[in-house]
Length: 102
Image 1 (tube, rainbow, N blue to C red):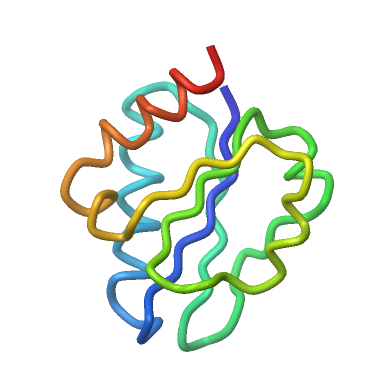
Image 2: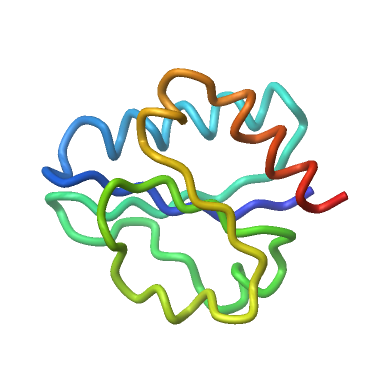
């Protein structure tokens, strides 16, 4: 399974990056391929390409704000969660993504 994800929070500092780390760590434990774009105080980092998005089974948006360039994901299967959900139960978030693709 391949997931592309975007993390973003209102201040774009700690939680954006903490969520990205949790998703990467948990995905590795579950045998899921994941690429994570962060939209934080430093702007967009690790920006997902159209090719990355096209190869993904699902787009995970972990955000408490409207993300930039959301139109890139039009036509993709999208699952939206809060940053808090990722930080408190990343296994559940990724398992829901798997279930949505089954």
